Image (tube, rainbow, N blue to C red; front, side):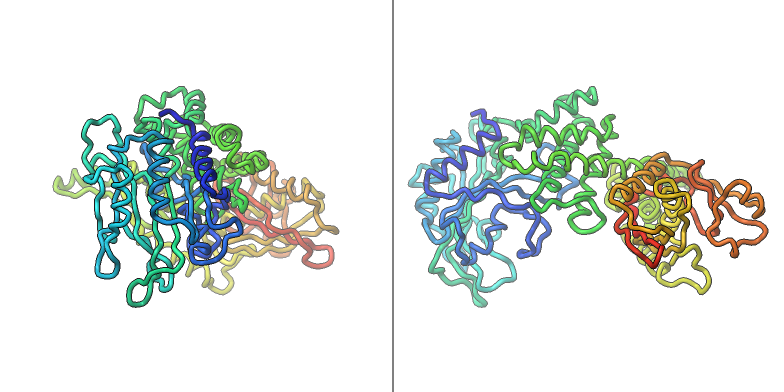
Length: 603
């Protein structure tokens, strides 16, 4: 049976709506905090309050197709079956129908609507233990419907029981899982080797107590079937990226790269990663509670996914614009009906993808050079030591301090360094990284008296970046607002910069954006920061800016950033502007009469 994603979605919803279920639609991908997880990782998760007894406003019979997200196996994305974003087809009975109706409906849906062979269906049920009896009722119902008796398997609690671990007073019960052979044309498939799970029905008929379980007065049914996996089965495929959810995107990537998905290899893996991660990016930014890439929480997960996709764009030989092209296909063609909010937010989604790509491209080029130097250093050491001692065991670990330098100076998340290392057959000293990170934090907190210069609280790599950024900001303010704007003070730590300057009024939003854009333009140009020592008289003649003339001696240190910024300064600076990342003004406010204050971050 050949079926599109839109057809499958509609068949599921129509089937259950015809049986009195209300389509409650999909809720946010972002967890509400009630179940302690960052994202909704299962279709039933948003319904937990109602499964625990709260009355649902739509009634006792519910159905939907719910978006979910899991990142625990992100490193597996790139094979034929793993995703970060996926959907679950669900339906629920909240104290209404139970096993008789549900087993019959699932069997009917799978065999009559989806056309699966009943003789190849296998199911598993709870075998029972000292706390709860064997689920013979479900087994008898399944056999009565036409499931072959030898295809009904009794399995232990670890396989066929659902409950919230560590809780008391919550509903729980036996789980009936459904399986179908991956190769439906195989004459005599053997369970479980040739089979894969396609969905399950959970029968919440007990309440968990401190001593075990007791029967519930109001019993619930919770059904979950994988949308992406079902689409794979119904189209007779063994590669989940060949369903119509992805084929349009893969075709676009083929056009952009000149490579063929069907040829396999690294190009195929890269296309899968770009396709999956872009879909997840669209769904998270376009969510009703949409998030943006950042360095904390859910935003950090999004940034990691986006930057992984951007890196694989480079590997595929296409620009990061490929993400925007793929995003358009998801928004306009694949999910335009199921998630109409995406179309409303299209311009916003594409803009944020582009911004993050620009941020990462600025750091990735220089960071990759540093990573390659690190790898080359390990190779040279191994070659040298082998010549000295043929029995020498080669080094295969990137040191923690090296990994921390990539993180602190070049913006490489530890996970990215680990992934790059794995591709070279190496690992990363994670404990050493954590130790270097802790040492860095402690040094940043404790500064010897008189050492802090230029408003810096430390001379760390990050503080050095922020200090250099003040030069760009100072020059940008002179160009956007007035040549008479001058720095009146600053305060810098590893998390942000604060910059005071003379100006008589609040900046307009347009002026703030213009300053941001100009600073980021100079960062993208990757301009060398040139140091020279000269006399104070020479520095003034060459129009170097001095913030407080009285603090300079006869010989001064000067730093120039092309023709854009020329300052006398005694603080630490980066070698090139490209390592700064992306500059963002967080706040513009009054500091005192005639003095404005800007707070900004580097991302």
